[in-house]
Image 1: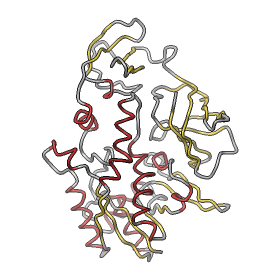
Image 2: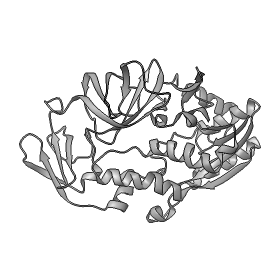
Image 3: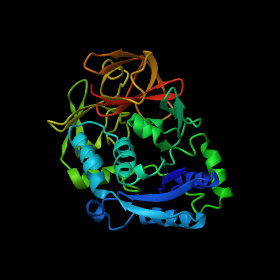
Image 4: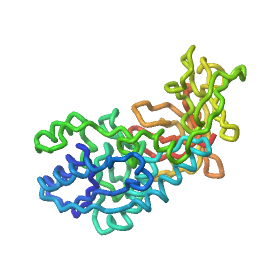
Length: 350
Protein backbone atom coordinates (compact mmCIF):
# COMPACT_ATOMS: atom_id res chain seq x y z
CA UNK A 1 0.00 0.00 0.00
CA UNK A 2 0.99 3.62 -0.52
CA UNK A 3 0.95 5.17 2.92
CA UNK A 4 1.37 8.78 4.04
CA UNK A 5 3.13 8.67 7.41
CA UNK A 6 2.62 11.70 9.65
CA UNK A 7 5.82 11.94 11.67
CA UNK A 8 6.37 14.28 14.60
CA UNK A 9 9.89 13.68 15.84
CA UNK A 10 8.76 11.50 18.73
CA UNK A 11 9.66 7.85 19.17
CA UNK A 12 6.13 6.55 18.49
CA UNK A 13 5.71 7.91 14.96
CA UNK A 14 9.35 7.07 14.17
CA UNK A 15 8.87 3.41 15.11
CA UNK A 16 5.57 3.38 13.21
CA UNK A 17 7.40 4.54 10.08
CA UNK A 18 10.00 1.78 10.38
CA UNK A 19 7.33 -0.88 10.94
CA UNK A 20 5.50 0.19 7.79
CA UNK A 21 8.73 0.13 5.83
CA UNK A 22 9.63 -3.28 7.23
CA UNK A 23 6.22 -4.61 6.17
CA UNK A 24 6.98 -3.67 2.57
CA UNK A 25 4.71 -0.65 2.17
CA UNK A 26 5.52 2.31 -0.05
CA UNK A 27 5.95 4.97 2.64
CA UNK A 28 6.23 8.73 2.29
CA UNK A 29 6.79 10.82 5.42
CA UNK A 30 5.16 14.17 6.11
CA UNK A 31 5.93 16.65 8.86
CA UNK A 32 3.01 19.00 9.39
CA UNK A 33 4.07 22.53 10.15
CA UNK A 34 1.33 23.88 12.39
CA UNK A 35 3.43 26.04 14.69
CA UNK A 36 2.22 29.61 14.93
CA UNK A 37 5.42 31.62 14.51
CA UNK A 38 3.76 35.03 14.68
CA UNK A 39 1.71 34.16 17.75
CA UNK A 40 4.64 32.49 19.55
CA UNK A 41 7.37 34.95 18.55
CA UNK A 42 7.25 36.39 22.05
CA UNK A 43 9.05 33.28 23.31
CA UNK A 44 12.26 34.23 21.54
CA UNK A 45 12.95 30.65 20.48
CA UNK A 46 11.72 28.03 18.04
CA UNK A 47 10.57 25.02 20.09
CA UNK A 48 9.87 22.82 17.05
CA UNK A 49 13.32 22.93 15.44
CA UNK A 50 14.39 20.02 17.64
CA UNK A 51 11.38 17.98 16.46
CA UNK A 52 12.17 18.60 12.82
CA UNK A 53 15.85 17.71 13.28
CA UNK A 54 14.82 14.31 14.67
CA UNK A 55 12.33 13.81 11.83
CA UNK A 56 14.99 14.49 9.22
CA UNK A 57 17.46 12.14 10.90
CA UNK A 58 14.92 9.30 11.14
CA UNK A 59 13.81 9.65 7.51
CA UNK A 60 17.34 9.98 6.18
CA UNK A 61 18.46 6.83 8.01
CA UNK A 62 15.43 4.91 6.74
CA UNK A 63 15.72 6.26 3.20
CA UNK A 64 12.14 7.50 3.29
CA UNK A 65 11.25 10.70 1.40
CA UNK A 66 10.16 13.57 3.65
CA UNK A 67 8.04 16.61 2.92
CA UNK A 68 7.43 19.49 5.33
CA UNK A 69 3.87 20.65 4.67
CA UNK A 70 2.54 23.99 6.01
CA UNK A 71 -0.84 24.03 7.71
CA UNK A 72 -0.57 27.08 9.96
CA UNK A 73 -3.54 28.88 8.41
CA UNK A 74 -5.81 25.84 8.60
CA UNK A 75 -4.67 25.12 12.14
CA UNK A 76 -5.38 28.62 13.33
CA UNK A 77 -8.83 28.70 11.74
CA UNK A 78 -9.96 25.17 12.64
CA UNK A 79 -8.29 24.54 15.99
CA UNK A 80 -6.74 27.54 17.73
CA UNK A 81 -9.54 30.04 17.08
CA UNK A 82 -12.11 27.51 18.31
CA UNK A 83 -10.02 26.79 21.40
CA UNK A 84 -9.80 30.48 22.32
CA UNK A 85 -13.53 30.98 21.77
CA UNK A 86 -14.33 28.07 24.06
CA UNK A 87 -11.92 29.25 26.76
CA UNK A 88 -13.39 32.77 26.67
CA UNK A 89 -16.83 31.24 27.22
CA UNK A 90 -15.61 29.46 30.35
CA UNK A 91 -15.53 26.00 28.82
CA UNK A 92 -12.71 23.43 28.81
CA UNK A 93 -11.84 22.58 25.19
CA UNK A 94 -9.53 19.87 23.87
CA UNK A 95 -7.32 21.16 21.01
CA UNK A 96 -5.78 17.74 20.34
CA UNK A 97 -9.23 16.32 19.64
CA UNK A 98 -9.83 19.01 17.04
CA UNK A 99 -6.36 18.55 15.55
CA UNK A 100 -7.01 14.90 14.72
CA UNK A 101 -10.42 15.34 13.10
CA UNK A 102 -9.93 18.74 11.46
CA UNK A 103 -6.24 18.72 10.53
CA UNK A 104 -4.50 15.32 10.42
CA UNK A 105 -7.47 13.49 8.93
CA UNK A 106 -9.16 16.66 7.64
CA UNK A 107 -7.05 19.36 6.00
CA UNK A 108 -4.10 17.02 5.44
CA UNK A 109 -6.33 14.39 3.84
CA UNK A 110 -7.88 16.96 1.51
CA UNK A 111 -4.50 18.35 0.44
CA UNK A 112 -2.29 15.24 0.45
CA UNK A 113 -3.71 12.12 2.11
CA UNK A 114 -6.45 11.47 -0.45
CA UNK A 115 -3.72 10.45 -2.90
CA UNK A 116 -2.61 7.60 -0.60
CA UNK A 117 -4.24 4.34 0.45
CA UNK A 118 -3.85 5.18 4.14
CA UNK A 119 -2.75 7.94 6.49
CA UNK A 120 -0.60 6.55 9.31
CA UNK A 121 0.16 8.13 12.69
CA UNK A 122 1.92 7.08 15.86
CA UNK A 123 -1.26 6.89 17.94
CA UNK A 124 -1.89 4.06 20.38
CA UNK A 125 -5.10 2.84 18.79
CA UNK A 126 -6.29 0.09 16.46
CA UNK A 127 -8.80 -0.31 13.66
CA UNK A 128 -10.84 -3.39 12.83
CA UNK A 129 -12.90 -4.00 9.69
CA UNK A 130 -16.16 -5.75 10.54
CA UNK A 131 -19.57 -5.96 8.87
CA UNK A 132 -18.61 -3.44 6.22
CA UNK A 133 -17.51 -0.84 8.78
CA UNK A 134 -14.17 0.17 10.27
CA UNK A 135 -14.22 0.16 14.06
CA UNK A 136 -11.89 2.11 16.33
CA UNK A 137 -10.41 -0.18 18.97
CA UNK A 138 -8.44 0.53 22.13
CA UNK A 139 -4.73 -0.19 22.42
CA UNK A 140 -3.69 -3.09 24.69
CA UNK A 141 -1.60 -0.47 26.52
CA UNK A 142 -4.49 1.09 28.42
CA UNK A 143 -2.26 3.75 29.97
CA UNK A 144 -1.13 5.01 26.57
CA UNK A 145 -4.38 4.37 24.68
CA UNK A 146 -5.29 7.42 22.59
CA UNK A 147 -8.70 6.49 21.21
CA UNK A 148 -10.15 9.27 23.37
CA UNK A 149 -8.38 11.82 21.14
CA UNK A 150 -9.55 10.03 17.97
CA UNK A 151 -13.21 9.76 18.92
CA UNK A 152 -14.33 12.63 16.70
CA UNK A 153 -13.13 10.97 13.50
CA UNK A 154 -15.84 10.10 10.98
CA UNK A 155 -16.30 6.64 9.51
CA UNK A 156 -14.48 7.62 6.27
CA UNK A 157 -11.63 9.08 8.33
CA UNK A 158 -11.26 5.97 10.50
CA UNK A 159 -11.38 3.72 7.44
CA UNK A 160 -8.48 5.69 5.94
CA UNK A 161 -6.42 5.58 9.15
CA UNK A 162 -3.52 3.28 9.96
CA UNK A 163 -1.96 2.91 13.42
CA UNK A 164 1.17 0.72 13.09
CA UNK A 165 2.03 0.67 16.82
CA UNK A 166 -1.57 0.34 17.99
CA UNK A 167 -1.18 -3.31 18.99
CA UNK A 168 1.98 -2.70 21.03
CA UNK A 169 2.84 -1.72 24.58
CA UNK A 170 4.91 1.43 25.05
CA UNK A 171 7.75 -0.74 26.36
CA UNK A 172 7.69 -2.70 23.09
CA UNK A 173 7.98 0.53 21.12
CA UNK A 174 11.05 1.55 23.14
CA UNK A 175 12.66 -1.85 22.43
CA UNK A 176 11.98 -1.46 18.70
CA UNK A 177 13.43 2.05 18.75
CA UNK A 178 16.68 0.60 20.11
CA UNK A 179 16.58 -2.20 17.53
CA UNK A 180 16.23 0.33 14.70
CA UNK A 181 18.95 2.54 16.26
CA UNK A 182 16.65 5.53 16.11
CA UNK A 183 18.28 8.83 17.11
CA UNK A 184 15.26 9.62 19.31
CA UNK A 185 15.08 6.18 20.96
CA UNK A 186 15.47 7.65 24.44
CA UNK A 187 13.59 10.88 23.84
CA UNK A 188 10.93 11.67 26.42
CA UNK A 189 7.28 11.64 25.38
CA UNK A 190 5.61 14.95 24.63
CA UNK A 191 3.07 15.96 27.28
CA UNK A 192 1.89 19.27 25.85
CA UNK A 193 -0.84 20.40 23.50
CA UNK A 194 0.10 19.63 19.90
CA UNK A 195 0.58 23.15 18.57
CA UNK A 196 2.45 24.46 21.63
CA UNK A 197 5.23 21.89 22.01
CA UNK A 198 7.15 22.78 25.16
CA UNK A 199 5.19 25.99 25.72
CA UNK A 200 2.87 26.09 28.73
CA UNK A 201 -0.81 26.48 27.87
CA UNK A 202 -1.11 29.27 30.45
CA UNK A 203 1.59 31.22 28.60
CA UNK A 204 -0.34 30.86 25.36
CA UNK A 205 -3.55 32.04 27.06
CA UNK A 206 -1.78 34.99 28.63
CA UNK A 207 -0.48 36.10 25.23
CA UNK A 208 -3.93 35.97 23.64
CA UNK A 209 -6.28 36.75 26.54
CA UNK A 210 -4.04 38.67 28.91
CA UNK A 211 -4.69 38.95 32.63
CA UNK A 212 -7.71 40.35 34.45
CA UNK A 213 -7.91 40.36 38.23
CA UNK A 214 -11.02 38.70 39.64
CA UNK A 215 -12.27 37.30 42.93
CA UNK A 216 -11.87 33.80 44.33
CA UNK A 217 -14.99 33.09 46.40
CA UNK A 218 -15.98 30.35 48.83
CA UNK A 219 -18.66 28.31 47.07
CA UNK A 220 -20.63 27.75 50.27
CA UNK A 221 -20.45 31.17 51.97
CA UNK A 222 -19.66 33.57 49.12
CA UNK A 223 -16.77 34.97 51.17
CA UNK A 224 -13.85 36.40 49.22
CA UNK A 225 -10.76 34.25 49.79
CA UNK A 226 -8.35 35.81 47.34
CA UNK A 227 -7.83 36.99 43.79
CA UNK A 228 -6.92 35.39 40.48
CA UNK A 229 -5.58 36.65 37.14
CA UNK A 230 -8.43 35.49 34.91
CA UNK A 231 -11.08 32.75 35.04
CA UNK A 232 -9.70 31.29 31.78
CA UNK A 233 -6.67 29.92 33.63
CA UNK A 234 -8.83 27.51 35.65
CA UNK A 235 -10.94 24.45 34.98
CA UNK A 236 -13.61 22.67 37.01
CA UNK A 237 -12.07 20.21 39.46
CA UNK A 238 -8.68 21.92 39.45
CA UNK A 239 -6.77 21.67 42.70
CA UNK A 240 -3.25 22.85 41.91
CA UNK A 241 -2.24 26.44 41.31
CA UNK A 242 -5.13 28.18 43.08
CA UNK A 243 -2.79 29.90 45.52
CA UNK A 244 -4.87 29.73 48.70
CA UNK A 245 -3.82 28.54 52.14
CA UNK A 246 -5.93 26.22 54.28
CA UNK A 247 -6.52 23.77 51.45
CA UNK A 248 -6.99 21.59 49.63
CA UNK A 249 -9.22 23.84 47.53
CA UNK A 250 -11.03 22.76 44.37
CA UNK A 251 -12.47 24.92 41.61
CA UNK A 252 -16.19 24.09 41.48
CA UNK A 253 -17.66 26.93 39.40
CA UNK A 254 -16.56 29.67 36.99
CA UNK A 255 -18.59 32.76 36.10
CA UNK A 256 -17.18 34.33 32.93
CA UNK A 257 -19.60 37.25 33.01
CA UNK A 258 -18.21 38.47 36.35
CA UNK A 259 -14.71 36.91 36.14
CA UNK A 260 -15.27 35.02 39.40
CA UNK A 261 -14.22 31.52 40.36
CA UNK A 262 -15.74 29.57 43.24
CA UNK A 263 -13.78 27.06 45.29
CA UNK A 264 -14.57 24.54 47.99
CA UNK A 265 -12.73 22.43 50.55
CA UNK A 266 -15.36 19.73 50.29
CA UNK A 267 -15.57 18.38 46.78
CA UNK A 268 -17.84 15.56 47.83
CA UNK A 269 -20.46 17.95 49.12
CA UNK A 270 -23.80 18.11 47.39
CA UNK A 271 -23.64 19.64 43.94
CA UNK A 272 -19.92 19.09 43.34
CA UNK A 273 -19.92 15.44 42.34
CA UNK A 274 -22.17 14.64 39.41
CA UNK A 275 -23.73 11.44 38.17
CA UNK A 276 -25.54 12.87 35.15
CA UNK A 277 -24.55 15.24 32.37
CA UNK A 278 -25.80 16.25 28.95
CA UNK A 279 -23.79 15.77 25.76
CA UNK A 280 -24.21 17.59 22.45
CA UNK A 281 -22.56 17.51 19.01
CA UNK A 282 -22.43 13.71 19.03
CA UNK A 283 -20.17 11.83 16.63
CA UNK A 284 -20.87 8.09 16.37
CA UNK A 285 -18.10 6.39 14.39
CA UNK A 286 -20.16 3.39 13.22
CA UNK A 287 -23.65 4.65 14.03
CA UNK A 288 -25.68 5.02 17.22
CA UNK A 289 -24.93 2.27 19.73
CA UNK A 290 -27.56 -0.42 20.15
CA UNK A 291 -26.67 -0.97 23.80
CA UNK A 292 -27.45 1.66 26.40
CA UNK A 293 -25.19 0.37 29.19
CA UNK A 294 -21.71 1.44 28.17
CA UNK A 295 -18.50 2.91 29.55
CA UNK A 296 -17.44 6.53 29.23
CA UNK A 297 -14.27 8.59 29.58
CA UNK A 298 -14.52 12.26 30.45
CA UNK A 299 -10.78 12.84 30.02
CA UNK A 300 -7.75 11.04 28.60
CA UNK A 301 -6.48 8.25 30.84
CA UNK A 302 -7.19 4.73 31.99
CA UNK A 303 -10.37 5.52 33.91
CA UNK A 304 -13.53 4.13 32.31
CA UNK A 305 -16.80 4.94 34.08
CA UNK A 306 -19.91 2.78 33.86
CA UNK A 307 -22.73 4.78 32.32
CA UNK A 308 -26.26 4.43 30.99
CA UNK A 309 -27.25 6.42 27.91
CA UNK A 310 -30.53 8.26 27.50
CA UNK A 311 -31.08 9.22 23.87
CA UNK A 312 -32.99 12.46 23.24
CA UNK A 313 -35.13 13.07 20.18
CA UNK A 314 -33.03 16.09 19.19
CA UNK A 315 -29.95 13.88 18.83
CA UNK A 316 -28.43 14.78 22.18
CA UNK A 317 -27.57 12.28 24.89
CA UNK A 318 -27.62 12.21 28.67
CA UNK A 319 -25.10 10.02 30.46
CA UNK A 320 -26.05 8.62 33.86
CA UNK A 321 -23.06 7.33 35.81
CA UNK A 322 -23.22 4.40 38.20
CA UNK A 323 -20.99 6.35 40.59
CA UNK A 324 -20.77 10.16 40.86
CA UNK A 325 -17.62 11.74 39.46
CA UNK A 326 -15.75 15.02 40.00
CA UNK A 327 -14.28 17.44 37.49
CA UNK A 328 -17.02 17.21 34.85
CA UNK A 329 -16.82 20.50 32.97
CA UNK A 330 -18.69 21.97 29.98
CA UNK A 331 -16.54 21.82 26.87
CA UNK A 332 -14.85 18.55 27.79
CA UNK A 333 -15.46 15.54 25.59
CA UNK A 334 -17.34 12.49 26.82
CA UNK A 335 -16.28 9.42 24.84
CA UNK A 336 -18.15 6.11 24.94
CA UNK A 337 -16.77 2.57 24.86
CA UNK A 338 -18.15 -0.94 24.60
CA UNK A 339 -15.92 -3.97 25.23
CA UNK A 340 -12.76 -2.19 24.14
CA UNK A 341 -14.25 -0.43 21.12
CA UNK A 342 -14.42 3.36 20.96
CA UNK A 343 -17.90 4.28 19.70
CA UNK A 344 -17.45 8.05 19.53
CA UNK A 345 -18.70 10.83 21.75
CA UNK A 346 -19.50 14.50 22.05
CA UNK A 347 -19.08 17.71 24.00
CA UNK A 348 -20.34 17.97 27.58
CA UNK A 349 -22.95 20.72 27.43
CA UNK A 350 -24.25 20.83 31.01
